[in-house]
Length: 462
Image (tube, rainbow, N blue to C red; front, side):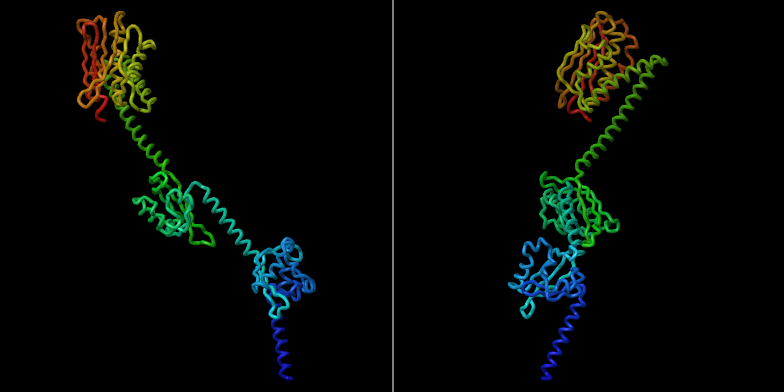
């Protein structure tokens, strides 16, 4: 009898101890129900978490902690059936307090050992749930952004070990997801650019930024294209060691920049050459002006005008080859009444184009011939006529444009004055052969000036 009493007292002590432990676990809601879900016990943690006192809830349905929509869907009954079928039921969902406020709880429902009901243990996980939800939303925003921008996006460790390549990278390079991880992505980088691409990662941690320009394989175009790659630390608690980066296609921009540098160098070269021509014109004009400032001014302005006209033609054509006919027309119009084909002038020849250098020098030669014709020759005398013709002939490996300028009906003096053998004569007989490897002939006949200029138009030296 004493043994039975002692055993009973032991059970009472254990029950009291268990009740004390349950009531002390205020961070956890622990309560029991019968098989119908009527609450039979309710600890202090349950009072704190759900807002119901034990007096309010014991003897009433424990389903009151579920949201109205979950009760309508029969979720409490489903949980009890899961316990009956599987021995336990995990529960993570929104619950409702006595005041109607909601919180996210993680709970476990288990059967009582004596089979008379159930015990539930629940804990408030709202902060963790919200943090996880925010992180999921942030991850989703990142995914949407990373897969929507035209750049190739990636995440990586600070040593360049890639942890995630965007779909754009895979599509652009043709390198698959798994093959792009680690150092595999370097296979899409031009072999000559791989050393400095790797080296940039060594300096990135100290600098807090990764930056490099390199060529990336474009599978669709079967070519390497220049990209600008930048990366920065993510500074995310969930991934403190990761960096995020983008690769921006700058191929067209870089090509344009290279082209601009070439154009700038070409412009500087042309400017120096043009200034050299102007200086040469000034020197020769001064030399032939016999000290007369007026003579120098008039002649120099005319020659600058000729130079300006040919430069305008070249600029309109973006310094490509120039039509010989357009060149001759421009000079004759400048010396006439606005029409080149008058009774005194005839022009005839096939379509021929000249390179810019030849066009500039030849324009000055035509200008000198036209100026002399206006002042002294065919265009200055009533019966005078000027015929300008040209043809193309082959001489060795070159095609040569042979230009023939012939005056007729001009009353020439017995002795040609020195004024007609000035700078123009030197330009035609000496400068053109030197500059263009041209063959020239200039003669003063009985009825006018005759000039032939043979200019190579193919196979010429640059």
